[in-house]
Amino acid sequence: MSKKNKNKNQQKWLTDNLKGEWIDKDQIIEIVLFKSLIHYVEKEDGLNDYAYDFSEGLKQGYVRQDTVDTIKLRQNELNDAYLYLKNERPALKNQVDEWDGTNIVEFITLEDLLLDKDTEVMNTIVKYRGYMWT
Image (tube, rainbow, N blue to C red; front, side, top):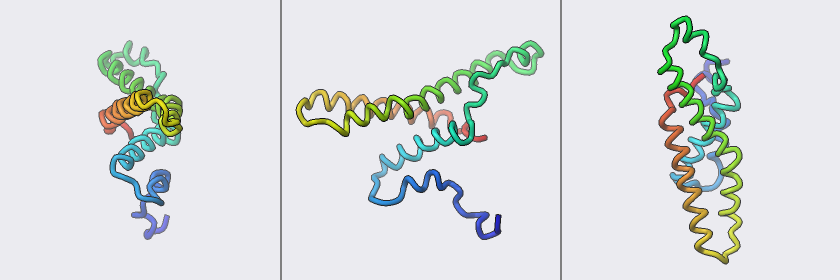
């Protein structure tokens, strides 16, 4: 890598999502957090110890049970957030985006559900941000 490129932003996977039309701050926050988790899981293999067997380390005393429990909880919560972003959220967002204009109560319910679930996932990502490096 040349000296000139050494300080250049290497987060093209993210910055490409922020180009183009005007984006409000709330959308920028969503994009950054959601894309960061997806990149962490898919490109950095960040959940590679999701199913790791700690039994030998526990038996040998190299790791404590409370440490294992903390790691498993973190990995489960990040995995659940990732699965929501990849599976549940696109369908829910599509329902909101494709609203036919007839049942306003249903629309508000869907929009609130999307907002609440997105906020829950963003809170999970922020909670574990210090561990999202590989």
